[in-house]
Image 1 (cartoon, rainbow over the protein chains, first blue to last red):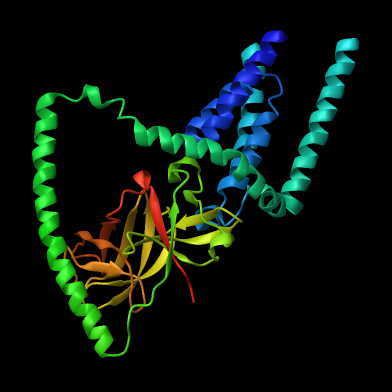
Image 2: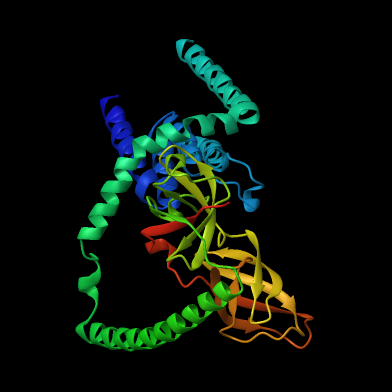
Length: 89
Length: 262
């Protein structure tokens, strides 16, 4: 339990720094690590909202929708959840 | 039995959580992110400022991997480029002086007003390919104001304004369409962004355009997007494709100017 919280805190700090500095794909990679390592990494959704809030501009390629990061995290969450279930089997 | 109940509860909680997320997204997300945009920017701004200061004061950490021979060759090439650029600049200054004198004679003098702003983040930090600058409505920035570099090269426009910061949509973002004028005869065409400062224009094959022709926006003192770098055409195709890129490296931008709209 203790190591789980430590991993959460370390990942949270890295993701906040990554949101500000590193490319979006690196932040997504860190979120994937979090979703794999931590049981219910709800912070990924919070960080997705932060990213959308910070950087959203209407883009035709995204049909001018503001929830690109949130959508990506939601898809990753379900995908990794299913993947983890299969790995245990 | 206990494990089954707790797993069942956990599943129920997750279902409610995702239902709440769905409702939030469908009904409130745009307003939610707009409301919190200023707060998150003020929290993250110190990290951006620190990162910019650190990158200004430290050398490229991978520089030591370059060989001495490569560095000498690069140095000589850059010196030649500087000489060429200085000659072009002298020629350009002469033409600019003539242009301004002609405009004054015709009663159309240059009255553009601009705000200087520093760039807080690089465009590849987010999927939206946007810039955040440290000028907001406290300095008179408005939505729709054009953003240029060195006053001459247009890169985007303001799409959101906060008190101290603003968001810039880059014209070169993938899929973005912008109206431009091509060549010396100001042919109207739509430039499509390809990302990373690159653009593409599709024009009828019969239109005369050459490599090096300027591509600018509309208006009397129109800033430029770039100049034609490559032309792709085939005899079977009724269109030809012009490729060009911004002369500015948007990943190394530090300062921009915002042209105040009237």
